[in-house]
Length: 263
Ligand SMILES: *[C@@H]1O[C@H](CO)[C@@H](O)[C@H](O)[C@H]1NC(C)=O
Image (cartoon, rainbow, N blue to C red):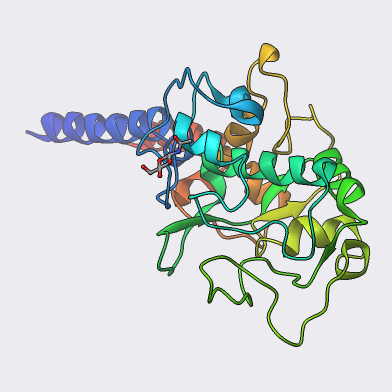
């Protein structure tokens, strides 16, 4: 009787240990699509992705239609008007197109997906660590364009079905509205991005631009941040899903055998 109870306890502990190792919280943050306006339910191959969104064609959260629309002015996606202070130059607009492609197509933003209370999406991204060059080139190519808003998620006059500058606001150069590159990347979409000093290829930041011939570099970045890298990188951020992702893996592996030895 006594022996079988010990055996049972051992099996229960072994089971828990195996569960800790094989299905850590981090796994659910990888290869997923957010629950938002145009995202697919699950990522998958998309042969027909358009233009600047093609890097994601091996595995994407966007459809071909969404990728085409991402390149159009006042597209059916959000009816957003890039030209609210005069025509946005091509070299600046390409960054906004790339930002849209990353947002709509990337299956690697899981560690930064949070719930949101909004009429048009249930989830959003918060504090995605953008690679230094992606942010700085975006600012550099847009610094001479003009805008009337710092946070492009709010404050617009939508009376005509697309966004216009409200009365009383002025069109000012980007470099005044956003004095530093970090101001642009962080403020323009209500902290969707976080400015980092990590360079492209470091495995510690998300790339808006990449060459798909070498694979998608953001796969490894999502993996890093879902397995506790986020906790290490910024202790102030609370994990959104899977609390166990912030526990050191060594503890999960060593603790159960230590308990077994005690039985
Ligand atoms: C994408 O789909 C929407 C909605 O069905 C449609 O209005 C739009 O014309 C399509 N765009 C393209 C480029 O096919």
